[in-house]
Image (cartoon, rainbow, N blue to C red; front, side, top):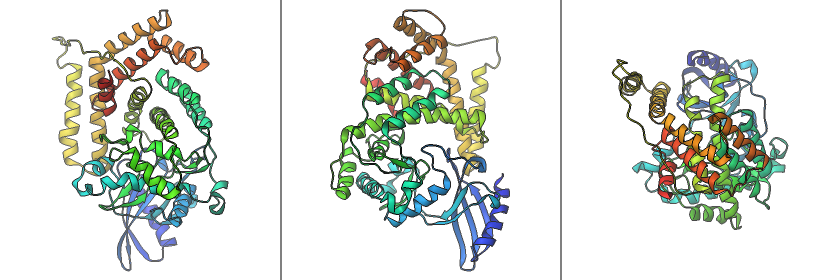
Length: 469
């Protein structure tokens, strides 16, 4: 459905269920929202113009609930319960029903604030907030984890997921994608060997991170995106906010803006209990493992799902960012980065890379300067994707040749790259391959680092991997 079609359907909903609303003036899908769609709605009331927000499933699909994904109806309920517990949340106004013809979702209060992680980390507007932000995140997480599951009824609505179940489910989800990514299998094995032993099952937001809360210059004004909430180990939230993917270029471990110590102090100020730092480290590793699989899932969704935007395959390539974070957390060491060979041709005029460059520059210099909103965002994503194609053109074959040689030495056999990757993956999954093998660690470090050199050489994890070596 186009924005205009959604606007027409929304007008029917508003006139039926919102007596104070006279007209829907505008409806616009916002940039981002890779998992769920977010819209800004402007309505005319008797008191004046009012903004609302709408959360909607991709393409408006009615999605059957799966483990760890409670669905938008329960997400709305979670926001209501959290609001009652003192967590900053927008008020939920209306839950969509199938008869509305819009799809699965809900309409809520529009809250002014900043949710872009990079701006939160860099803008002068939030300079006074940043030193206090990690502590505030700890406080709010503790409020969430303290919600009474029985009184709220959430114990009957949410899945209970233990650390082992979470690891195995994620590993199985990756295996179903049928792509051999040995670093993901290594991380899964490590996680199963280092499971947290003692925790009190609690409400876990499961996506509390920089970029999923909204701030004003002096405080957090809303916690967003409850779509992954479950009952489990509360340290999952503390580890997730520390995952490097959500630091947006910042050097500090908590969201790029704060320290572990401040996060823990904020949490302990509410709970009165010491944070289990080892469990937080486990969940930080798990977070990169989980998001590495999630990124691959976005690419698969592009292939098979209804939302074939340029954003999804681009996110798929971010899996290597998470994999290099696992390398840095589990096996830092020396790496060998390949260099691009000389490439020139007087046969092709223009050369293929020149064609790609011209399209990329058109997107950046023409499309982006003359558009705004989601179109502008997707043009940037498309230009970035072409950068990946250019780097793969330059480095891909050399990196694959180095990887093949390392695999042949590690496995003491010959074959093509796909065959040997699958052989290593099967050995990791069966337990036949030891995680302590230094040759394995060297292969993984070099392979992942050379992949991130193609996918995103500006990523901080790539720079850290080079520094570790």
